[in-house]
Image (cartoon, rainbow, N blue to C red; front, top):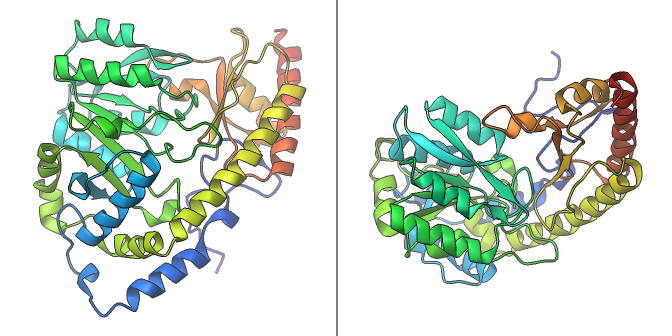
Length: 385
């Protein structure tokens, strides 16, 4: 029998695909999770093998709250946490409970392309709002709130996917103030917040759950391993109750009881912190290498800002370049990326591209940059741009 596929992603060994927004296989913490699982399974209490408490195992939530409080530098109450089977599942559940098909929602332009797919699955009408170097444009948000009554605003405040921009501290205050004034539910995708390199981002929007209708999404996919399919929602007591009372949770209990038991051990044994430290170090090295290579090899007309955290570099080419066409040239040279149009809710951003530095080691990233530069040159010659 041929080897059966187990992972979502397969990249041939001779290809450098910057579209891969996930950790490389050798960064997956097999030994750490083996130790954590052994620790949890050695516990004679089998409660984590039963249908779990609606919001999640209280001991795990308490451990997670302490961990987040240490990193967020603000208090976190375990009663404001709700376990999900990853941020994507959490976002899907939010769409189910807090919107109906045909509702309008606000997103940033650009926005996470797979979140846009989830919104499409729910039949939601997307209104995109511009961003600048400090994040979401507050004036545009305020103006659009006079024209629409959105079910929610979906925002990625820290190390934005794909742009890597971080929402400025004063704008975080402003968006929460607007949410109170307009009864606007904020859905903050904060899965990259803990992946800072040097600069520490402003406190997460999770900080404001007692000041306005804010739901914050977090995930162990970015700080431990994607396959654990474990994340959390942090929000106010009323919204926690709404999540816990839904039919999905009433039917099956906590959304990932067993894995949360293993992750409790990972937190208590210091294994999560060790993995997070490793990831931040490796990703920073990769980010620096790729940024340097891109600056050296790409034309001066290609603009990007070196990120201070997260996974991604957002390239802006000259207006005449269509990165969907550029991708065809790149693939012939065995290099890939995600075109900017994927991240637009209105078919724009055709001259942009997202590159991830999370999957490949430094030599592959540098080789990928060389191939991309050749692809850009081939494209320019062919289309005379």
